[in-house]
Image (cartoon, rainbow, N blue to C red; front, side):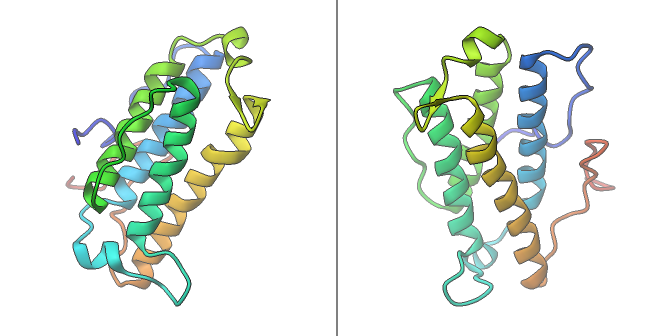
Length: 163
Protein backbone atom coordinates (compact mmCIF):
# COMPACT_ATOMS: atom_id res chain seq x y z
CA UNK A 1 0.00 0.00 0.00
CA UNK A 2 1.24 3.45 -0.80
CA UNK A 3 1.72 6.06 1.91
CA UNK A 4 -1.60 7.84 1.27
CA UNK A 5 -2.42 7.76 4.97
CA UNK A 6 1.11 8.38 6.22
CA UNK A 7 0.00 11.97 6.88
CA UNK A 8 -3.32 13.77 6.61
CA UNK A 9 -3.73 16.29 3.81
CA UNK A 10 -4.46 19.93 4.58
CA UNK A 11 -7.95 20.59 5.86
CA UNK A 12 -10.56 21.27 3.19
CA UNK A 13 -11.29 24.91 2.33
CA UNK A 14 -15.01 24.49 2.92
CA UNK A 15 -17.35 22.34 4.94
CA UNK A 16 -19.71 20.28 2.80
CA UNK A 17 -21.35 16.88 3.06
CA UNK A 18 -18.53 15.47 0.94
CA UNK A 19 -15.63 17.13 2.78
CA UNK A 20 -16.91 16.09 6.22
CA UNK A 21 -17.33 12.44 5.24
CA UNK A 22 -14.01 12.38 3.39
CA UNK A 23 -12.17 13.93 6.34
CA UNK A 24 -13.67 11.30 8.64
CA UNK A 25 -12.48 8.60 6.26
CA UNK A 26 -9.02 10.16 5.90
CA UNK A 27 -8.70 10.32 9.69
CA UNK A 28 -9.74 6.69 9.87
CA UNK A 29 -7.14 5.76 7.26
CA UNK A 30 -4.46 7.71 9.13
CA UNK A 31 -5.30 5.99 12.42
CA UNK A 32 -5.44 2.53 10.85
CA UNK A 33 -2.19 3.12 9.00
CA UNK A 34 -0.28 3.93 12.18
CA UNK A 35 -2.07 1.46 14.47
CA UNK A 36 -1.00 -1.33 12.11
CA UNK A 37 2.40 0.02 11.08
CA UNK A 38 5.23 -2.52 11.22
CA UNK A 39 3.11 -5.35 12.56
CA UNK A 40 4.93 -8.67 12.53
CA UNK A 41 3.39 -12.06 11.94
CA UNK A 42 3.64 -12.64 15.69
CA UNK A 43 1.77 -9.40 16.45
CA UNK A 44 -0.97 -10.16 13.92
CA UNK A 45 -1.46 -13.45 15.79
CA UNK A 46 -1.40 -11.86 19.26
CA UNK A 47 -4.61 -12.41 21.20
CA UNK A 48 -5.08 -10.51 24.48
CA UNK A 49 -7.11 -13.30 26.07
CA UNK A 50 -9.17 -16.37 25.42
CA UNK A 51 -12.18 -15.59 23.27
CA UNK A 52 -10.79 -12.21 22.17
CA UNK A 53 -9.93 -11.44 18.56
CA UNK A 54 -6.28 -11.41 17.58
CA UNK A 55 -4.94 -8.27 15.93
CA UNK A 56 -5.12 -10.08 12.58
CA UNK A 57 -8.73 -11.10 13.18
CA UNK A 58 -9.55 -7.50 14.08
CA UNK A 59 -7.96 -6.27 10.84
CA UNK A 60 -10.03 -8.88 8.99
CA UNK A 61 -13.19 -7.58 10.70
CA UNK A 62 -12.29 -3.99 9.79
CA UNK A 63 -11.97 -5.05 6.14
CA UNK A 64 -15.42 -6.68 6.34
CA UNK A 65 -17.00 -3.53 7.80
CA UNK A 66 -15.42 -1.27 5.20
CA UNK A 67 -16.41 -3.66 2.42
CA UNK A 68 -20.00 -3.68 3.67
CA UNK A 69 -20.09 0.09 3.25
CA UNK A 70 -18.24 -0.04 -0.09
CA UNK A 71 -20.71 -2.66 -1.29
CA UNK A 72 -23.57 -0.25 -0.54
CA UNK A 73 -21.99 2.09 -3.10
CA UNK A 74 -20.53 -0.45 -5.52
CA UNK A 75 -22.61 -3.66 -5.60
CA UNK A 76 -19.85 -5.51 -7.49
CA UNK A 77 -17.71 -5.29 -4.34
CA UNK A 78 -14.09 -6.34 -4.06
CA UNK A 79 -12.39 -9.70 -3.60
CA UNK A 80 -11.29 -10.21 -0.02
CA UNK A 81 -7.49 -10.29 0.29
CA UNK A 82 -5.78 -13.27 1.87
CA UNK A 83 -3.48 -12.81 4.84
CA UNK A 84 -3.19 -10.11 7.50
CA UNK A 85 -0.88 -7.70 5.64
CA UNK A 86 -2.98 -7.97 2.49
CA UNK A 87 -6.11 -7.33 4.58
CA UNK A 88 -4.48 -4.24 6.11
CA UNK A 89 -3.57 -2.94 2.66
CA UNK A 90 -7.03 -3.89 1.40
CA UNK A 91 -8.72 -2.00 4.25
CA UNK A 92 -6.63 1.10 3.53
CA UNK A 93 -7.52 0.74 -0.16
CA UNK A 94 -11.23 0.49 0.70
CA UNK A 95 -10.97 3.69 2.74
CA UNK A 96 -9.34 5.42 -0.23
CA UNK A 97 -12.04 4.10 -2.57
CA UNK A 98 -14.75 5.27 -0.18
CA UNK A 99 -13.12 8.70 -0.05
CA UNK A 100 -13.25 8.78 -3.83
CA UNK A 101 -16.89 7.75 -3.86
CA UNK A 102 -17.92 10.31 -1.25
CA UNK A 103 -15.76 13.15 -2.58
CA UNK A 104 -18.44 14.43 -4.94
CA UNK A 105 -21.57 13.32 -3.12
CA UNK A 106 -24.32 15.75 -2.20
CA UNK A 107 -27.17 15.52 0.30
CA UNK A 108 -29.63 14.05 -2.21
CA UNK A 109 -27.21 11.33 -3.30
CA UNK A 110 -26.35 10.58 0.33
CA UNK A 111 -30.00 9.77 1.02
CA UNK A 112 -29.90 7.04 -1.65
CA UNK A 113 -27.20 5.04 0.19
CA UNK A 114 -28.78 2.44 2.44
CA UNK A 115 -27.48 0.04 5.04
CA UNK A 116 -29.94 -2.05 7.03
CA UNK A 117 -32.71 -0.56 4.85
CA UNK A 118 -32.08 2.89 6.32
CA UNK A 119 -30.60 5.89 4.54
CA UNK A 120 -27.08 6.88 5.57
CA UNK A 121 -27.44 7.25 9.38
CA UNK A 122 -26.65 3.61 10.21
CA UNK A 123 -23.40 4.07 8.26
CA UNK A 124 -22.17 6.49 10.92
CA UNK A 125 -23.26 4.60 14.03
CA UNK A 126 -22.60 1.24 12.37
CA UNK A 127 -19.54 0.44 10.27
CA UNK A 128 -17.73 3.80 10.54
CA UNK A 129 -17.97 3.95 14.33
CA UNK A 130 -17.19 0.26 14.60
CA UNK A 131 -14.04 0.61 12.49
CA UNK A 132 -12.80 3.45 14.71
CA UNK A 133 -13.49 1.35 17.80
CA UNK A 134 -11.51 -1.56 16.38
CA UNK A 135 -8.58 0.64 15.40
CA UNK A 136 -8.43 1.72 19.05
CA UNK A 137 -8.54 -1.92 20.10
CA UNK A 138 -5.58 -2.71 17.85
CA UNK A 139 -3.59 0.12 19.45
CA UNK A 140 -4.46 -1.15 22.93
CA UNK A 141 -3.71 -4.79 22.12
CA UNK A 142 -0.35 -3.76 20.66
CA UNK A 143 0.50 -2.14 24.01
CA UNK A 144 -0.51 -5.35 25.78
CA UNK A 145 1.74 -7.29 23.41
CA UNK A 146 4.66 -5.02 24.33
CA UNK A 147 4.83 -3.34 20.92
CA UNK A 148 2.93 -0.04 21.02
CA UNK A 149 2.00 1.63 17.76
CA UNK A 150 4.24 4.52 16.67
CA UNK A 151 3.18 7.84 18.23
CA UNK A 152 1.57 9.68 15.32
CA UNK A 153 -0.41 12.85 15.96
CA UNK A 154 -4.02 12.34 14.79
CA UNK A 155 -5.00 15.90 15.73
CA UNK A 156 -2.43 17.42 13.40
CA UNK A 157 -2.33 14.44 11.05
CA UNK A 158 1.43 14.08 11.30
CA UNK A 159 3.50 10.90 11.38
CA UNK A 160 5.66 9.91 14.32
CA UNK A 161 8.96 11.78 14.59
CA UNK A 162 11.49 10.36 12.18
CA UNK A 163 8.94 8.52 10.01
